[in-house]
Each structure stands twice: as C-alpha cells, then as structure tokens.
Length: 155
Image (cartoon, rainbow, N blue to C red; front, side):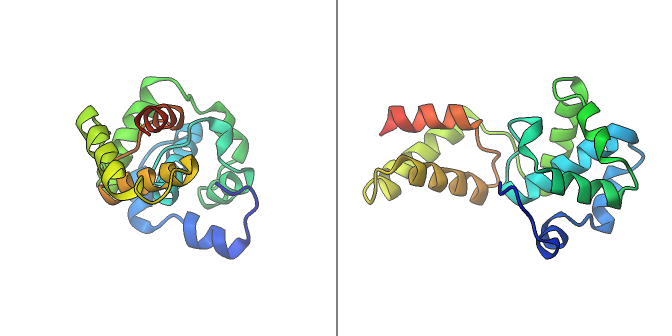
C-alpha cells in the first residue's frame, strides 16, 4: 500500500459509509478504530494488513477523524487476541469473502500454471496475478510469505 495519500484518494477509498458505520456498531475506543481500519484496508487491498504498521498514518488519521477518535488509539488495538480474529471474520462476511483453504491454493496454483506461467516467470508479476485471482474468487489470500514460498516451489 502506498505511503502518501492525497485527500481525494483518502475520501474515495477510506470514507466510512452509513452501512459500514452500522457494522462498526457499538465498538468503542481502540476496538472501534482497529475494526474500521481493518475494514477499509481489506476493501482496498482484498486482504488484511500483515503488520500493524503496514497501514499508513494518513489512513489511520483519516479514519479516526470520522469516528471522532484519537489516531493514537490504533497503537493499542490488540493485534493477536481473539477480538481481531472475530473482527476479521465479521469483515470477511460483510464483504463476501472467505478464508483460503488448501484446495483454493491448489486451484489458484493450477490456474497460474495454465494461464500465467506460460507468459512470464517474473515472480512479483506472478504473485500479483495470484492475489488478483484470489480477489476475483472473493477469497482472502494466504499471507505474503506463504504465497511467495508456494509460488517459488510451484514455478
């Protein structure tokens, strides 16, 4: 995700819509902000951030302002607990995605072999195509390092 954002891009990609505000519901504090950041990041990237600091500060500030919260609360959002797992499940359901299975990975790797690897062996390009395919199938892709290993093994 890019690090520098123009206001019009923030408005286009990270404005919370009324139905999203209802989804956020009665969450409070860092939980409210963390959930909203995960939601908008997922809608933009079709995956969740791999690390808390992957989300640009400008994006966090913009989302926090809409929620009338301090952007500093994002630092307190628990990145490893049960809540984030539940939040991710809620977001997946809301956007119509599901978690990736081993069968999904096999199908995407087969698709890559048949449709992509005949054209180019540039690993980053192949990875982009794999992520794009997962997005089109509405499946959350595996973690970046896992996907990298799979593609390297498969190519």
